[in-house]
Image (tube, rainbow, N blue to C red; front, side, top):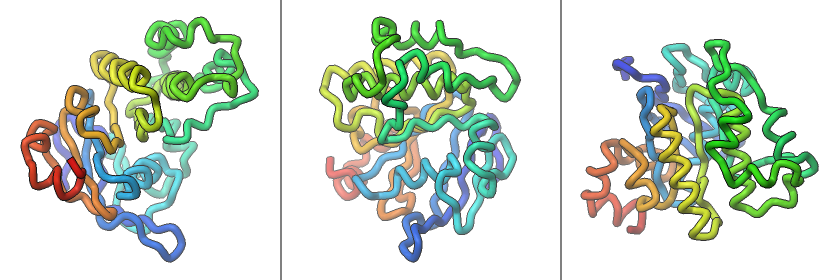
Length: 240
């Protein structure tokens, strides 16, 4: 895969294993500036592992991960975060004994350009649900509120690319709608997003392109519209 115009993140043939069990097999994807890419597949397909590999949370055995043309697959996770990768993990990992406000402020970091486009005020404006909860402890929030807080914490780090791992998983329908609106708002603001999801319907109005992953391999790469029209791929890999 050669570098294409506007490409900000490129994953080329990565292999990842947990001990002796290999999870990803020559996995590849790329994301352009301002694009939303959906990473779709059934539970256990390898979506979260792909996200963790990009974020440097799990090591790659081989392959290449490039952020704005620089190979980062051998870098530790904290260095990758400083270079602009923001990771919203599936299990949220908020600080339960800190207030909402403290959870956000502890994550303040300049962008790679050295500025702060995402401020505390802007995050509260983007996430109005959190405003009245500023002094509530993270552990006292509902699952949906914690998900919003995790996204807000990520934005406080002023990332170049946001990785959202299963943001709608386990939430009530009204919270799923709110998460969907939040992602749409982030996209409108020019945020580059990789969205890991099981639910194709959730991604249809949000993503530009999609990569379908099955048993650790990319089995479809194309526009989200082309995927929605591909009944064979949906039936075989997404149970749609």
